[in-house]
Image (cartoon, rainbow over all chains, first blue to last red; front, side, top):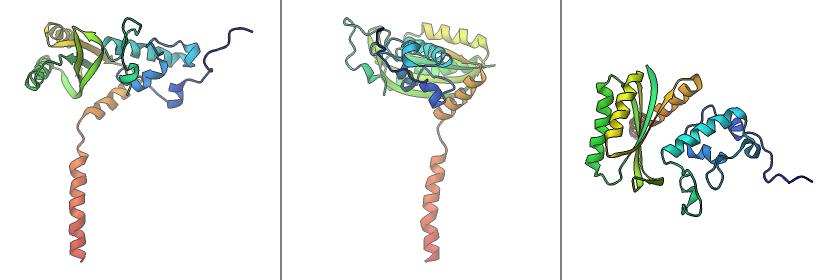
Length: 87
Length: 133
């Protein structure tokens, strides 16, 4: 048996919500595509469609530039409440 | 003319007067360069995701405006030299879907005029009842 998939295969959440444009200030929308350590989740794990994945990638990178979400979270650079930014 | 959105973060150490002064200064640059300001949105004080110039918090403000591309150069030059501004980002909205979102954002950040109308209706209602009685 191959390694089991850690995440259930899902459909694109943004398509379900009928999102046309992902705003970088709307952190609630970005949340689905971020890992616990604020990495961008790959499409194979989130089930995002290609169109929305591209949009969310740009949005996340913009949000990082404006200090809305952290670039990295590791043991040296701990955030007390990781999802404090996502309200 | 293109649609632009600029987000900038001011230092948290400023007094209210100083922040108002800085916001007015940035808007003055836009007006001087011939840009049409559509709306401003004050997101207020937020905790930054990572320290910027040793600041842990910042005052977020967004300006939505219509302008020619040359304005951006002048605006960003001023933002760069302004020491009270610790972060800024300008985004252009061009595609049709982006433009509809832009209109939505502008509508969301413009002050609503429905509130006084609603209060007037409330005032009228009891008077009508009184006349009936």
